[in-house]
Image (tube, rainbow over all chains, first blue to last red; front, side, top):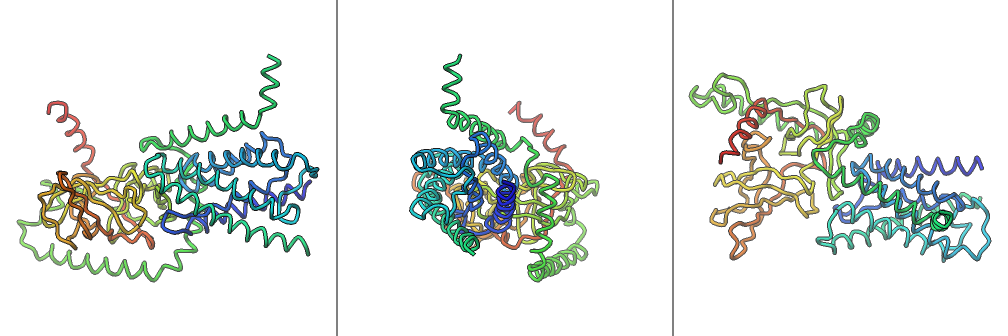
Length: 171
Length: 277
């Protein structure tokens, strides 16, 4: 239990720090930007009460927002991500028996489950984020373009992360 | 009552979503307003500190370019100083008012955080209200204009960069002196901007310099960029001009905040004038 808490705290600090110092400066103009800090929210243990999940997501989003000067945008997107996560887990994991507080990570789950999980949650997060950031439905094709390609970028980065973590676990 | 409770617990994910999403969107809408200050941004003391520390590291890598730029500026200043000192006294009054008070003062500051890749970009600098910086002041760099001060804390300030969808700056074409407003708009390239509301009859030359008009926060004649293309739309009375910005937002390290000593007086006078028009 302590280990899970510790792991998640480390993930939070590392991912948010990487987000605001590294990934903020990476991208193709401002059309494609990765937001891999959401990996922290996706790897939160299964079985946390919903209120807890929403609170963690909201506060994580606010932390990132504070660095991006976009108060509320990342918070709203993270909350949307948690809703998608809850729905996805409910639909896919209900039949299976899963340990309490297991981390949904490669090694624990198969890639066949993990990839759609990343893609769907990431897409909903980015869509919310870009719509709120532009705050208009004008030139919606730009928003959609940014969403889709940033989503691919983010998912690729998250896959790299999970491969790195996967190996360490096996050893 | 019991049924409502059952409904709430059964679909608690949806209700919690509505609650938290509502709060977040409310924050976005409230924070969108230019006039409203908020505490949770990069001019906040803690986050300002973190950014200042991290930029201390990265600035080291860019020292060379910063030095080059400062040297170039020094050279330019030396030339203009020479001009002023040797000039005939009757043409000396450009920046002084009739009593000899300078109209503009400059506060130099170091950039501690900068963004280029957002739809709306912000810059943080390491000077704040304790150094005399106020909300709404203009900010320039050695090579061009940078933006407008948005939020101020005692030791830091956030600037709404020129690369922001709400930024509008009064700019003029150097040769014809026709003026319009400069926007970044729906653009996504940090090196380009659009000059709007220039009447169609004005002749625009490719490569013509665009400078500040002096009607707003910035002193007149500060370089903004160069014309690269014009679009003349038939039947419209105004044309849009694309320009390249002279400010290099990639390597922005030192900026000057423009203090307009007479801004309060000018605004008061204009506020008194307008109702009678």
